[in-house]
Picture 1 (tube, one colour):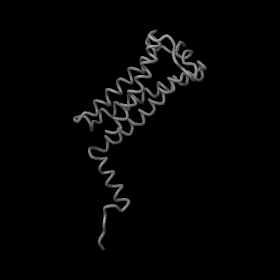
Picture 2 (cartoon, rainbow, N blue to C red; picture 1 turned 90 degrees about the horizontal axis):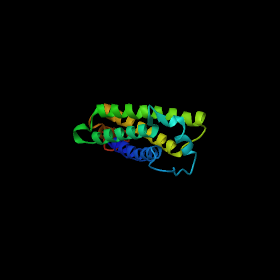
Picture 3 (cartoon, rainbow, N blue to C red; picture 1 turned 45 degrees about the vertical axis):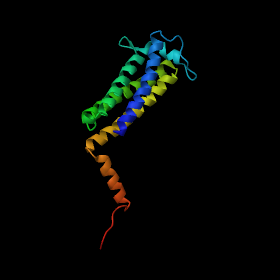
Picture 4 (cartoon, rainbow, N blue to C red; picture 1 turned 180 degrees about the horizontal axis):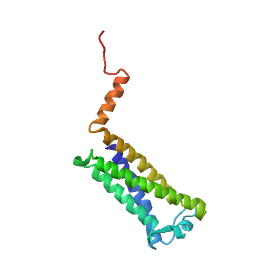
Length: 164
C-alpha cells in the first residue's frame, strides 16, 4: 500500500511536468522556461509528435493512467489487488521503455537535451521501481508486511526467548 502512495505522488508530479510540456506544444504557453539544456529544440523537433499527438500528451495520458491506478488501488476493496499491481508494472514499464527511446533520440539524433524530459524519465523510472515493489508485496499476499517485520525482529533475537 505504501508503494501505491509513492506511485500516486510520483505520477502526480509527472502529470504536472507532462502537462506543462503539452501546453507548450499545443501553443498555450509561448516559451518554455528551461534553465538547462535545449527544451525548445527537443520539443520543436519532428520527434516531438507520435501518431499525430505531441509526445508530451502521450506522457500526460500515461501519468494520468498510473495516478488513477494507484489511487484506485488504495481503496479498501482493491488494496491487495494483483491486477492493479500488474497494470502498474505494465504501464510504467512501457512508459519507461518509451522514455528511454526518447532519451536515445535526444542524445544521438536531435543532439539536444530537454531538462523536463530528463525529469520525466527519472520520475517514470522511479514509478516503475515502486510498481515492482508493489507487485512483490501483492504476490506475497495479505499481511506480508506484518510477517516481514515479525521475521526481521526474530532474526535479531528480539521478542524470542528460548528455554533449554
